[in-house]
Image (cartoon, rainbow, N blue to C red; front, side):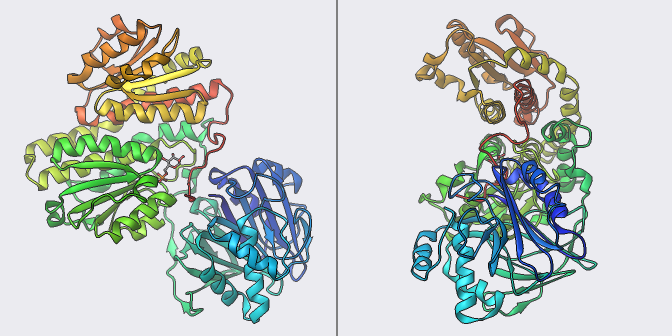
Length: 622
Ligand code: G6P
């Protein structure tokens, strides 16, 4: 994980680096650091543990560091605890202590990713007299670059490519060399990195929102490339050290989209952006009442030849897969299995050319999902990525890409990207059903019409948020929560439970309602909160019965159901009604009150909603 930034130009670097880092804090926030240099002077390194404001305070908002060229880092610890010593930047010099202050080093660097063979490389460097002050893999990478740089006297680009050949793992690296004032060298493999260059200034960052305030002209540095960044300019090299041309892309979306816009938290803002995210995604793939997936390159023949679908993802994106499984099997009649990417990549799931592997990912950078995509391709499957971040690695490597148009999502707990992914998978299910003649044109039209009404129905649910806010205030001290449902309602429960636990730190689990009695019900005691999702007519009474089983053991019941099922009030303690839609699409509506419950519970408990402990938004480590 981690976020990296860089700047070189005519302005003071440190305030710009801090500002850019503040937009990357979602990538990690256990420590942060800057290295800034003033012309030919030595780089000055400052680090701080904890959130970014500690570093901002320590550097007087960056004013204490003079110089127009610098790199910065916000960390999510992988190797070594979150301490000053382990915080980045790391230096090549044999300094003792924390690596802070003016560093007498030839190379200073920041890194995002994991160097898997760092132990072996460290031993080699120790034999050559290098001294290590941190526990990080990054320090090894920086020192290895320094080793080749000095041994062969080959210049930064070649020293970096030699290092890239030796290291295994993933990385986005930004390095400054003492002999090259005003320049930053960068390299990447499987970790995101973009470079902006305009008008005598240049920027580096893990993600576009970090530099959008400064430039819209962006290069997406390719895997296994090195970049040489100087004021207003970036040159690119392949592993042989040969220069390669990279296209400059203009970012068209608005920087405003990455700001809080009057909401107390990004999460609340993003919950409210769901009608727009769903509408934009729908409008990009449903044109004149008909599905148009030409942007993906997935042909009708390819859809006809699908024998099975394997959906692979992590976290909430996996929950989208769980919901999509019910919808795709039911509408298109194609066997669908849903796998966690971290499991899929190490299993031997039978896959053939008739398998369509769908990777769902907001960031398009999740390490396990990316690895799963590569495994699927190696095994000969067709691959389709449902991705939110344009130009991300998964989007670039998949055979076909269906972009969700949720815009930048900042809160660690996903909301609008989840909703956009759901709608994209619903449209895909309808399209596949239609192409495979499992559905008439009239039925497809009816279902697409239902989808078109979802944004407005989400807005209606949002208008009633005060009720959920009130309920959350009553349950802020609850110890355990069980989310239960059957069928699609189980898939929705999975997401509701994750939203609750990840931001409120209340223990919660999701269970298929019929499975509770096989063990879990023994955990139900007085006032254990049971949240039942009841949107599927055929399963409604069965889930109500399971809820009653909990009530008779002391459970306190909240039921989420569709308008009209007023008899639920006779059985449960608190009822939340949502508008009706076709049952296949209920997840898009039922998830909204569950997101709000998680959000308000976290607020009531005084927690950091947007940056929950131990988590990061983009998980680019295994
Ligand atoms: C992290 C995020 C989740 C997200 C998951 C997968 O755990 O906190 O919100 O669902 O990663 O991320 P992706 O970017 O692949 O959707």
